[in-house]
Image 1 (cartoon, rainbow, N blue to C red):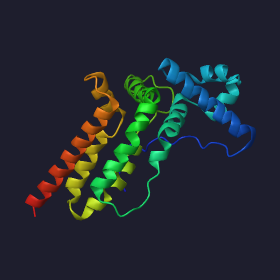
Image 2 (image 1 turned 90 degrees about the horizontal axis):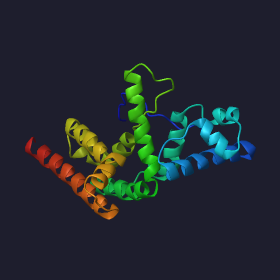
Image 3 (image 1 turned 180 degrees about the vertical axis):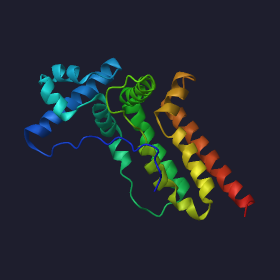
Image 4 (image 1 turned 180 degrees about the horizontal axis):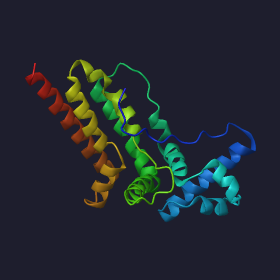
Length: 214
């Protein structure tokens, strides 16, 4: 299994039924809508007001912005986080992961940008000694890519596979999407094709390098 410097933040488990489940969904849906509309991460108090729920109740479900944004990201990317075993090659798995995920970047772009924004904001606050909430830790992509690359274990030395794993984690995220869209004005389909081309180039380079060292 991949080793994390920091364990990724897990979303609060949603209640399974009843009033608690509907309240949780109301708060989460409201947060999703506010981010979609305004492009910034709302405070828990703001979500409570917009949901017509007391602040005390909202904080019981989401005690911090980190807890809230983790649930927002899980709602945005949840389906692609569940991986299943199959007999496809590593390259095929990587392609499937990217092709499944990038359309969700398009659908939930404001929410995923907000998550990156929160991580950067908290990093700066933590360095300044001003962070007053549990930091939001990203990193679920590490596990997803580890599964995708598993079939390459027989073809790549551990060090090469580890380097490929880390390199692909740079491409597999909202960061690459934002760079290509904001700096180059690329459309969604062109972004996906470009990122897949880069992923293939990294896989090819790793495989060729491994062959030379045998």
